[in-house]
Image (tube, rainbow, N blue to C red; front, side, top):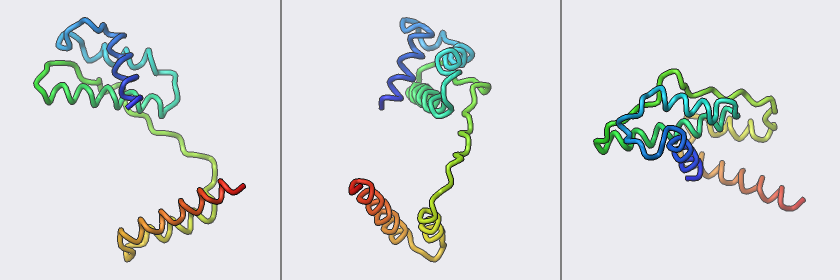
Length: 124
């Protein structure tokens, strides 16, 4: 909710809060996103862009004329983490990835593992 409020609020401020949405051009939305979050981390860019995209889609569904996020303001792919996954995670992931294991059991295994991992951290 916070990302949504920040993304939509600051973008609206940047393009002019008092302007009718129908008078805002697509490129103005893209330029506002770029100016506000163009140099931030990939995940921040993606979160703010998604919030504005969602808000504009909501407006369009309700019949309001307005801009769209331009195609050049693309979602960025987050870089791969260089931290190797611990052996225990890989074995749990392999178990969960098996097709013959039902969804209920997969959820159960994941919950058990996450609970064990959380308790182990809190005991240190």
